Image (cartoon, rainbow, N blue to C red; front, side):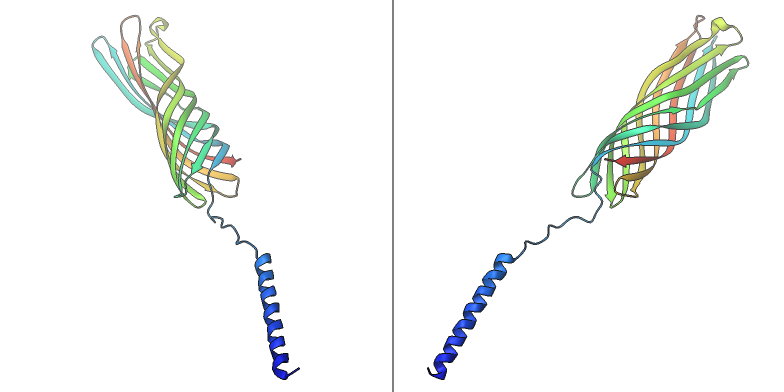
Length: 232
């Protein structure tokens, strides 16, 4: 066999081996890894507890014998309770959700309207159902909230020392508009801290005693609170 023939056979064998190796590489090639977003995802259910301060603001107008008495005072107290809800995060990092909360406030105030007329106003148990809209900066979420709030209220007014002239509106449930804003931060995959401000206007309550005297109460509450929640 000539040297040319041996060389041709060697080249042919090399080409066959290379083709076989290439085919083998194609067969064992692995698919590319699926890309996962590095950003924190806020979608899901959550539940938590809150605590903080409650500032009640009451405006009282008392009309007696063609005289008008006016008082406007605020009182600070504590607030504490629980909350829970659901978030959904869109691809553009906007977040929407709904939330329920239930708590209790210790804010109350007494006013002297005339020389011998006194009023008492206080908040008790309160709650709300709110829509939340926010924007996520990875683990930090800025949000605004609006909805309907309800509260257990007491609005009383005492004319002098005559118990028969007392006007009592105790432990009544009043609804109003609530709104606020806040920030959340995800310290871990499941634990989230929160700080927020919430304002609720429960509207007017008008009371009459048997002498025809009229008292008008406007009930407002400001909440500044912090919370911690667990994401499921």
